[in-house]
Length: 158
Image (spheres, rainbow, N blue to C red):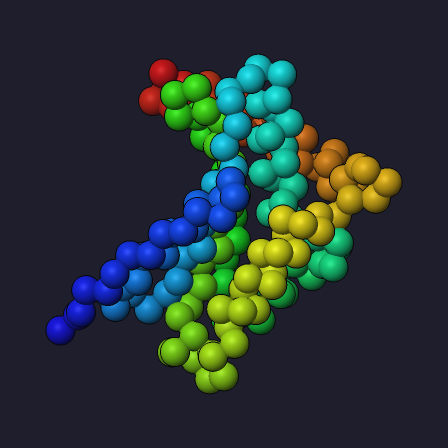
């Protein structure tokens, strides 16, 4: 039998924290949403930033190192996406991970996950104010290919 736990909300400056406890799942999902007014001048840049934060950080400068760190968190998964809702452009960053109570030494797993999220958000792979050139070039090409593929999917295109 599952017990209903109380949802927790707290406003910290401009950040809205919401915790939704549940006994239904054996995983945790940590979601960050970065909202900004929809602006034609920044939509491509924001889509590119979402792609860049998925690939590496200053501490994990290659995609392989970044994915190894996720694997060390019992196969955690991190992804980012961009969406439009009304007049807002939203970057969503998500970390999915196993609940620490189901793995050995899992009592520090959530803390390790938040440490990684802090690394992703506050220490991107930036040098002298610019993202890593090779990563930017690769992600620009990937973004262009994704945009071109929209024309092939009539439902998404509509």
